Image (cartoon, rainbow, N blue to C red; front, top):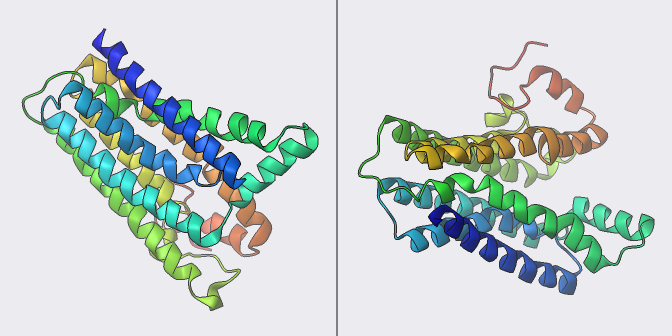
Length: 265
């Protein structure tokens, strides 16, 4: 029953938040800010679970604090990028296509294609942070320490990757070029790889709490699929292949996801 209560409360919080954000998107005629809420909303979920269960030990605290560190860093970065660059072209295209080809209003397009889709995905990806807080624990064990280390590495990896990308784009002479130095020399998507590390690390912490936490494996599996097969790598690479003439050569020598030494030309 408690499992259902925790999940039910968080599901209600997610639904309320996404409903409010959808109404804001209708007012702004732009749903692009939802990307920042993907991360910030998980911080809300983590703390809702923590407060609801009463913080039952070091595993719950580790899950909540690591999720908070990851979510605030990524969410505020994406919010800054949205404020700096304006509406995301992906969402502009998506909204325009739905209105032109399906005859949907902006409100309907935003609700069905963005917010009603991302809400359940966010909830499922965040399962380790929810289910890992239910069983009381006394001390972190080897599996949890490995999870903490992996999550910290993931946060640092994507933070450095994002910082390198921002610095690269800030230089006018790099316009139209491909970033292939720093972490981007070893993987074409250090930010996505870092994300995956974070959520697999959080899962290891949750799994150590018992069978309830172990059931949350759907979270890291789902985020890895989303990043590598659906909304992450495929979306970015399709756009880069169209707009960066040097990108094909970069693809041939650089690992897609897991960092590896670059191949020789």
